[in-house]
Length: 170
Image 1 (tube, rainbow, N blue to C red):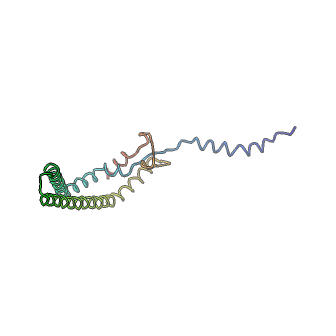
Image 2 (tube, one colour):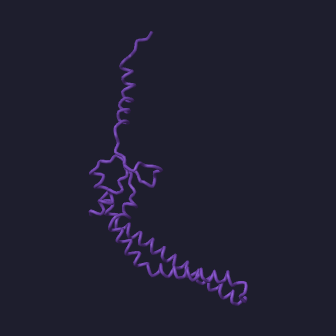
Image 3 (cartoon, rainbow, N blue to C red):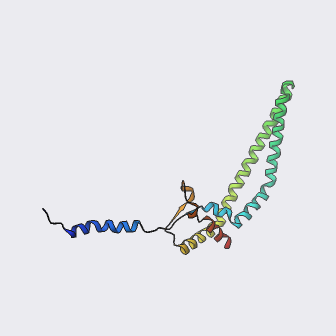
C-alpha cells in the first residue's frame, strides 16, 4: 500500500478551496434601465412637454385629415352604389389625396420625434454618465446589468429610481 502524500493533496485541493471561497463572496449586482431613468427625470419631462407643444399643430392636422378621410370612406361605402362613376372617382381621389397628406404629416411628426429624442439624449448624456459614475463610486457595485438584456430581475436590485433621483438633484 502506498503512503498518502499530504503535500500533493494540499496542492491539489488548495486552489479549489480558494476558488470556492471566492465564489461564495457576496457580489453587489444591480439592474439599471438608463432610458427609463432619463425619461422619468424632471428635465426630460419638461423637454417632452415642450416638444409636444411644438408638434401639437401638426398632430391636430393629422387628426383632422384622418377624421375627414374616414368620413369620406364612410360616404363612399354608404352611397357608392347610387353615385355616378364621376362622383365615385372624385370621392376616391379626394380620399387618396387625404391619405397622401396623412402619411406625409405622420412621417414629418415621426422625423421630428426622432430628432428631438436624439437632442434629449445628447443633452442628458453627460449628466447621466456623471450620475452613474457617482452612483457606482458611492455604492461600490460589482456588476451593473442593463435591464433590457434581462428576462427577469428582482425589483430590489433595480437602481433606476436612484439614477433618476441623482439626475433630478443635478
